[in-house]
Length: 202
Image: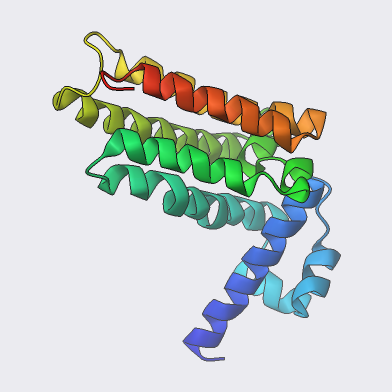
């Protein structure tokens, strides 16, 4: 196989594994289903990922983190209008979770934190690292806004960032439990209002 074919095979396996883990959870995820979805052999799978655990960790590192990097972390880091970008990123999440299937399955990061963090230290380490990166991206965005006088004096950017990330994930979890896109939208609109309340020009 060429290097490009090898890369495509690996990408196919990761995409299929992400979908299977999102639907079933890591422990119940079926290798047979992943192979069926990709049309690949066990040999191809184990060439790239010798164990199911290594496949799961790669999904965390290369799929879940990558999605958040594209949708949340990078836009916040690169923005010259960080508060507005934060509001827009939250709004984008509202749009993605108006699909009933997205609400039914919930947040893949949150799902794995609930399932695997108590059971496996490697999963916990990687999942916590994503949460830390998320919190820092929000905190840095708020600090940049604070430096140019956009926030009320005395706003604790670290505490606000922790609350924003926690509330964000909580909104998804509640909406999943209720199976209600409308509940998610309502909750996230309140989160946007909280972000606006930190600013001098809400």
